[in-house]
Length: 305
Image 1 (tube, one colour):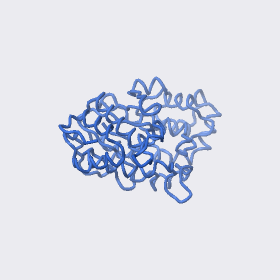
Image 2 (cartoon, rainbow, N blue to C red):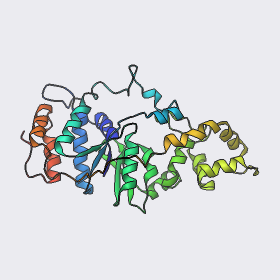
Image 3 (cartoon, rainbow, N blue to C red):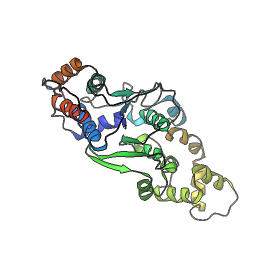
Image 4 (cartoon, rainbow, N blue to C red):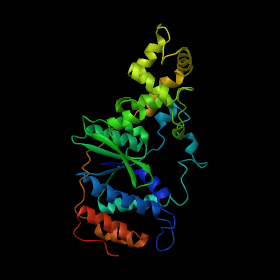
């Protein structure tokens, strides 16, 4: 099980009220929600291994160089990612709790968590569940390899299991073509403009007709008589977006070849540092969440309250 950590702690922050606080009154809702969601996921799906995948770089330079608008609207005035004031201080606490609990956390300099997930999923020799609220990771869905997405549809409790059938039913394309579909359609939440005038239905129809973005562009560059879905109007839009289409695939497609060290990810049978975990739980009011997680993991001793 590969957790898109930032996606989940943002979901937890917005899904659990900020009235959930530490003993001294600081919000701890994102950490509580993340730990509770992890416990539920482990209880429901019983993975052998679990890795929290981290954004070491939430807006990698290679993606910004290709499409400067990539996530530009999320940049804070002082630089870095714009984050709610109540969330920022919780992230280091979560890092410390994961370390004390013995849950693997992996990032890679210059890459997003999506790329870490893609690399680990590609490397895996067993079935993989990817837990995320990011549809871009639908491109990894592969029934033959047992890769599926557990999509956090709303909040932190509504989980949708996404396999190839689900991608095809909702978007009209196979998982392997989802990245090309996303390039064409665009994604305002990531600052990707897409091809102006090409929406979801047209993007799906083009991929169904020509198999891939490369196939669509090859047909558009040819001398074929325009025919649906490659009408004269669509041809004009594709030609107008040629510069964008040259570079956008490198932004949307996840990297599957990061040079990561071996990652075990085995579920801990006991906390890595029980004393530190107990101290963190007491200081931040996380006792009940840590107990739930420990119970699911089968820890022999619970962190004291």
